[in-house]
Length: 207
Image 1 (cartoon, rainbow, N blue to C red):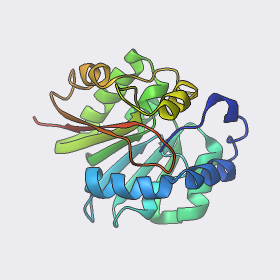
Image 2: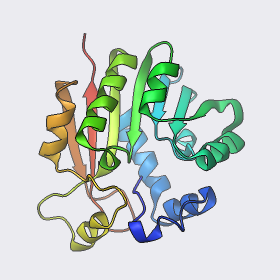
Image 3: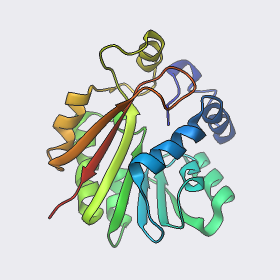
Image 4: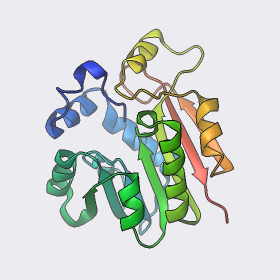
């Protein structure tokens, strides 16, 4: 859920190190709350996970039809080894997804992705999500954010994130609502064991 800081980037490149760090800061508990309180996946839903990492989110989801994409071949290899035919796992980016995907999805996940993308790339991601979502489907994202009154350590950590495009709530909403006018933003300070601030977007597709 939380991305690694720039100083730890090389250390956490191996999939096992990434998973260890995520569990150390409480990412598993965070994923559980994220799924239960914001994703609301139902058995049989088609779920597309953009930037799936090692696909640990699958341990929190019901029996869904899952497709995960990530730029890291090591993460995808780990996901395949762990989950087998529980999902489809592919190396690729937003552009390659758009060409390869068929059918419509009920839920698109973008966990810890948007703050790694510039504005044009974020808009492309939202366009792709809109294209592949069924009517009534949702894209749900989670990223670090800056907000007033946040813990000084959270701000310190987020400033050192390897993602260079951390945005405020208003900045994210201005991008999301260009494609998804019906978007809700939730800011949370309680998902990790360490002080940290996340913003969750829930964007509904209505034709």
